[in-house]
Every structure is written in C-alpha cells, then in structure tokens.
Amino acid sequence: ALCGLVGGAMKMVAGGGGSGFVHVACVQWHRPAVRYVDEVYMDKVQGVAEVAGEAIRHTCAICQRVAGATVPCMATGCPRRFHPPCIH
Image (cartoon, rainbow, N blue to C red; front, side, top):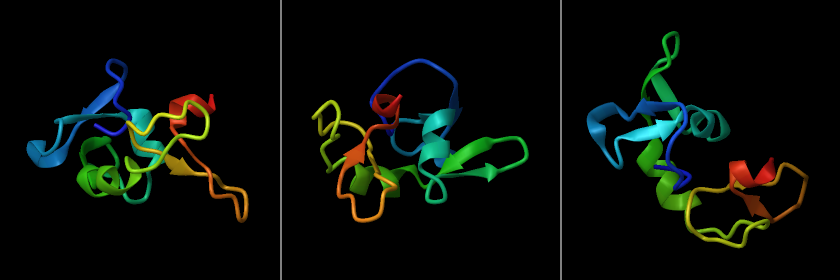
C-alpha cells in the first residue's frame, strides 16, 4: 500500500480502500497522517490514500526508485526523501 513491498506484519486499511493492507512499520514511519482507528489494539489503518498520493511522487535518494512512499530527511534544510526500508 505505501512501500510497494509484500509480506511482513500488516494491518487492514479502514474501509478496505486502496490495497487493503499496510505494514505496521509503514504506519509508524508515516505518522501522524497515517494512523490506527483503534490505537490501543492497533486496529484498522486510516490516512493511507492521502499519504500515498503525495509521497509516491518522490524519488528515493538511496535506491533512486519513484515507486513506494517516501519520507523526508529530518536534517534541517535537506531536500532528500527516502523509502523507510532503504534507510536501514
């Protein structure tokens, strides 16, 4: 849904919009825009479509792919964006 990868720990997207599932790690990287409907039980994810629409338009500074949602660099003034899995 956000990263373009399959497998791993995933949660269902609220309303089944988009691909239907998103990685737990992707939810954490894209907070607060992507969040759980029920934070206590980490159940049903919302905000995926909004983030995916904007974040997939950028090139990852590490792998150079445009596919998958990216996050901005946290360094002040840095224009780079990365796929969370590429950072590790």
